Image (tube, rainbow, N blue to C red; front, side, top):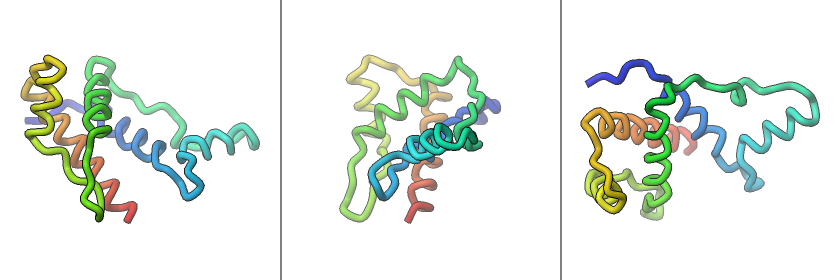
Length: 118
């Protein structure tokens, strides 16, 4: 199954990067916004990334699932299929096949970005 180029992964990648906490505890987004206020220069990461509005809700779903992610002392655990099913069941949501596929792609992107941070 292929998701048409909706911009979802580009949007998710940018949001994940901007949300990363820096050594001082502030997010990258906060640092870049502060730099922009002080210098008047806008960093390319702060530019909007086009994402089809009809599927942006999947990013919200992923963020909600991600907030419940567990760790093992060495890093973050993947979100399991059982975890996705439990999340959806608690909210009364029946995920369509393409939604599951998109959530899997978001998970792969998230985990690859986390491994690059190490």
